[in-house]
Length: 157
Image 1 (cartoon, rainbow, N blue to C red):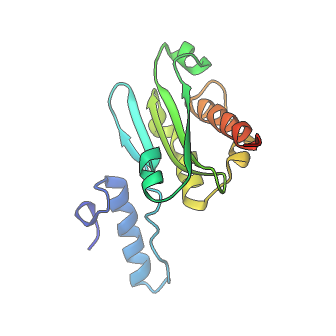
Image 2: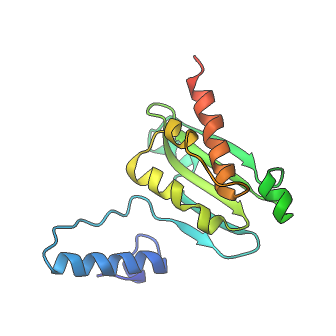
């Protein structure tokens, strides 16, 4: 079964992905669907977007998780758009990988995809911190959260 009703989350983009996977599998492509990092977006004002686990969910799964939050409203993006919001990232302390991201603010449904890729393939937070982000954007605020996380995790305990 494919489509919205198949789950694990009920999103049009997930249904589209499942349809593509079903065709590829039917054609003998050998592809295996990966539903590990499904983006979520709510088109309200402000928009919200997320992927992965919240810090409490990560801890329930046995991950030593910590979260870092950046205020979008006091960033250049917030000043330019005269908007409020936040970007919160959840990082696994043991392997320094992103396990979740939660955003609220203008255009965050378009900014979530870097976090989706990072959760999907386990990109280390240091790589995300060293990535150049366009300015002033919500993605840049995400980058700032990654820089804060990388610096914090580099400090001796």
